[in-house]
Image 1 (cartoon, rainbow, N blue to C red):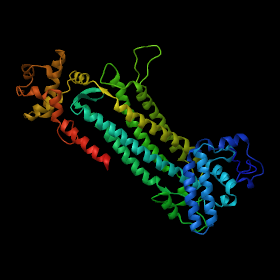
Image 2 (cartoon, rainbow, N blue to C red; image 1 turned 90 degrees about the horizontal axis):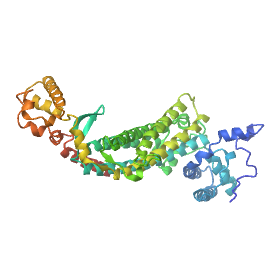
Image 3 (cartoon, rainbow, N blue to C red; image 1 turned 90 degrees about the vertical axis):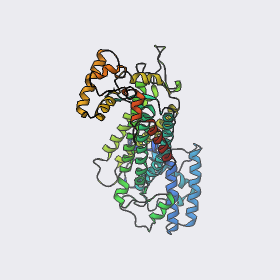
Image 4 (cartoon, rainbow, N blue to C red; image 1 turned 120 degrees about the horizontal axis):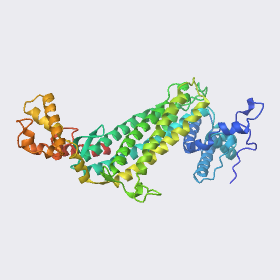
Length: 467
């Protein structure tokens, strides 16, 4: 279908000031239609609200409004059915839609741009787009958190080594370990909810930079589009992209958290750990080594994290030296923002599915706890409760660990008489305390790894998800 909007497509809307056309190279270099056409639905939403306001304020007629509504409805249908012809010479999504509208309805289409500029128009489109993206991402975060909770609930009593410096530190519940990531994602959700408030402010009505002389009603447009308020300074509204930078910072933290979990999955799949297996659909093999099962998805999450961090730096750099108000630099905000949204959405979707297929080797986890003197702190605490100052207890236990290493056994494998060489205060009840399960049970306070506390944390988390 040919929807040629005007007789001469090469004539720009702003060409009256110029004595020669732009070169083909410059036209291609400056055009954004290749990537900003994804804003089309939001551009149409904004235009419909703008037109309704113009009519209510007596700036355009009711007939013009009806023609604009019908024309934009047809354009929306053409775009959804992939029949709309995007023209590079029309530069961007706004002019492509405007020219098509004018071709369909004549002068009424030309009146739509009254009291606005592409500067406030694109700022509005991006905010509408990003608001929707944030809502989608928050929903996907909750889906991943639910998958984490389901896995954690299966392993409340599964004991594993907790690590510091990647060395065995203390016994913890695997469910407790997973709940740490729930808390990270919870903060990620809260950051996005807070970020959304600043995204959800209307720039439209700021025009190019100074506002407009027409008697517009910005509050009406904000209400029609579901914005919580209007941007209070026209210069700021059209020129700053801090809301996109803030979102990118939130996205970078989400990816950082997922990258940390990915790193653990990669380590835990290594036969030296053997803690977990991922479902085959999330792994690949080797073209030369038949035995390989490579954790490609976690590795790619780890790699894509750097890409998202790069987008944040790109947006910060984009804004750092711009004078007020709008500059063409800001055309470069969209590709990093769009890629950030796409990457976060795809990553969260695949991660929730991947978590549902994690197989846990409980025996391997427990064996690892027994190889690292993980209950040494419990022995020190035991002696402290008997009246020995903690620093003295620390030294006694350190020597006990040395002795166990000389005997090539774990601390909790020592006989009572062996332990009593280092302190006569150690009695038979130490046997239960030095087991991984006894150690885990003893951390029975809010935020601790005791199974009862992990269960309580899961219940609180499920309640939070329903709010």
